[in-house]
Length: 119
Image (tube, rainbow, N blue to C red; front, top):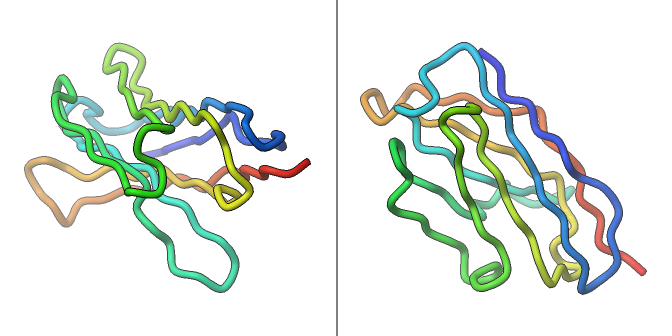
């Protein structure tokens, strides 16, 4: 089982980035997918999630609502996070997580990708 994030980097305030999380080793379409972020000294926080299957339901933290969009492509076993209007406070390591829709305790994490928003 593997989740591999990519797309992080350094961006100026107001800029955009798209993160990707490629999954392998499990039935991706049956897993809800989430993005979390963490800064040093703070707890990991939920940014957004998308339900399994067609991803008909999404939800966002208030801090990113209207700026971030989560989508999934089950044919490519990949979940995306489009981040627009980035702010310095969005700086963090971003992680993706998969949660089985059938066995909630079955969860997988990626290794994280650094996003830095700075001028």
